[in-house]
Length: 340
Image (tube, rainbow, N blue to C red; front, side):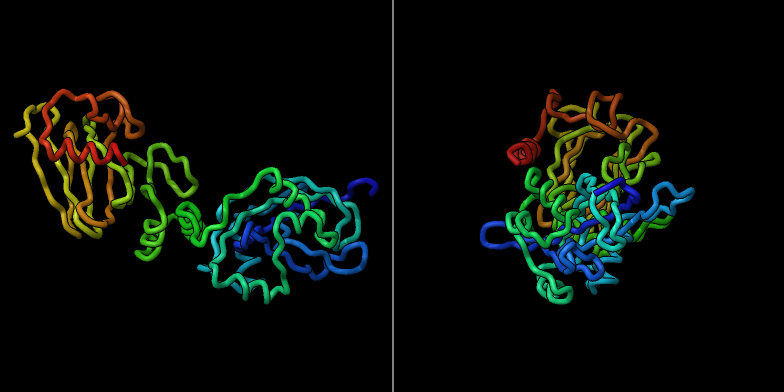
């Protein structure tokens, strides 16, 4: 091919639909991407992101912007009809540029994209696309070298099976992409969509962020949770404070001061939608949804908020080995959650 003269960065979108035995991927003829035989290459939905990485100044753009350029502006999908689920490792492909017809070194970024199932066929029709399973793609002579490299990677590293719904984390990341400024707006419908699909808490502020949509807690944590989230009996070290709010449904809380003993030391409170309860430090407690429900919880204090450990060292200490006597109702709740 000769010496490499250009270097380009490009994203490739993996859009799937289920078939009888395996998932199929959308490819389509890309106008201007001419194969050696003179016909357009079949390619995955694509967009160049950086054309000259050695330029003295490269304006940074989030990957979400390029997903929107391809799916919303070029292919006509509404912005609520797709979700970026996963970024796959970058691939290096050296090939003749299908546009400039000169040797080019490509850095290819494959992205796993979920598209609303009822939009898949119309999307394919608009771009004159076709659906290929992995075996068909790997043996198709019309496929572009960069797309072939992506499918070669998938042969060794298969994606999770297609789902008719996006993931909770995918929806949360899409919300993040729309709220990248100093004010993050969370509409009720967006919150409901995220919680309805997920099976764990939606943590927006945490002491140790581990997901991209989470922000660093500045003396407090902030989470939404549902009846699908497991709870346990625990006590907070001083001066940690926890605040629960019920958005939907009915929730109960059993609690007692850490230093008091006996079943009579426990209190029972039932919360309805719109109710709030504050749990002070050194309070043993367990919460449980009595119905389907959604709620919000804040945990605040200058002490260590993250992790589970010994009292006084971590924000939360489970009461699993606590010698204090518990009412039968509390024992039953703890047993139910342990069975999970």
